[in-house]
Image (cartoon, rainbow, N blue to C red):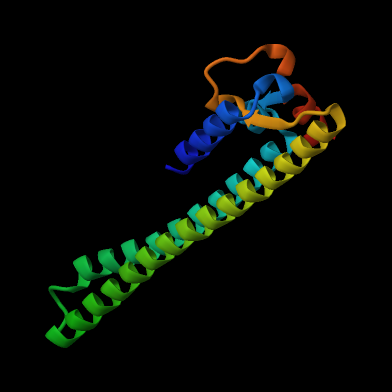
Length: 164
C-alpha cells in the first residue's frame, strides 16, 4: 500500500511539473542489494547466527527426546507420582524448546530487519550524494517504473560507491 501511495504521489508530481525541466535518474535497488559486498557480509553473519541458534535448539531438542525416552522406559515401573513428575518435566522442557525456538526466530528477524534498514539508509545517502553531484532533481527506484532510458540509470554508480 505504501509503495502505491509513493507511486501515486510521484505520478501526480510528474503530471503537475513539466518533466522537461527536471533531470530524473533511476536506480535498481534490487541489483544494488544483490551486488553489495556489505550485504554479503551481513548475510554470512546471519547464517552464522542461524547455525548457532539451530545448534542450541538441537541441544534442547535432545534433552526433550532424552526425557521422552526415559518416560517410555520407566513409566510402566514407576509410581503414579513418579510418572506425573516425568510427564511434568517433559512438558516443561518441550515448552522451553518452543519458547526458545520462537525467541531465536524473533531475534533473527529483528537483526535482519535492522540490517536491511541500515543498508537502505546507506543507499539513500549514496543516492542523494550522486544525485546532487550529477545534478539530478529526482531519483526513482527502477522497480517502480515501466520504462527508462539506461543513460539515466545510476545503479552502477551506487554499487561502486557502496562497495568502496
